[in-house]
Length: 193
Image (cartoon, rainbow, N blue to C red; front, side, top):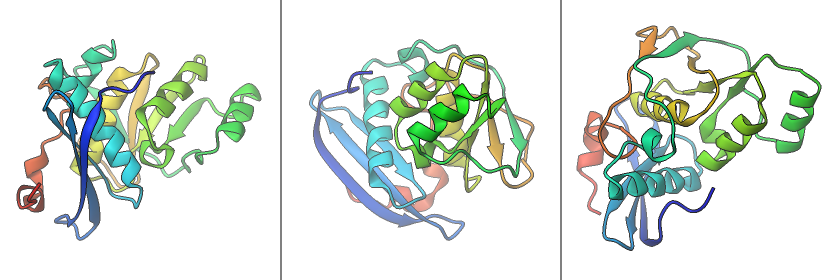
């Protein structure tokens, strides 16, 4: 998968979200002048920058990310509680596990794997296995990213949480970009880009 946009500027800020966790929030400015945003609740700013670049690409094309990547709009994505461990971000071990039919369902933390491209590569080799995307902190931004990412994948996908879900399904937002409501966190609006 090619780079989504030519980026002329990148900024990353650390904010404290309402739950007390630290978030790294990225803004990329595409060469065309369109801004895109991304985040992570871990310490890998690369995840936030990758997400922001895809957000900018979808905004430039005035489409939700799933449509940009040829995915299908799913009106509801299943959200389930699951305490089984996510597959560690080790490409060689993952391929061996898939080849040996170790898993029927691939439980992936998209924030640990690092990029949309890696999740798409995994889906390409997953065969008929389903994929479950972990929202590790059950934050609404994580849920929205997992839902959008799931809609871009060609395999059956669900969202898993480590805590009981508030709802058994999640709907996608149809706005251009990655569909995250950034204003759910007051600290986001306070960032001086």
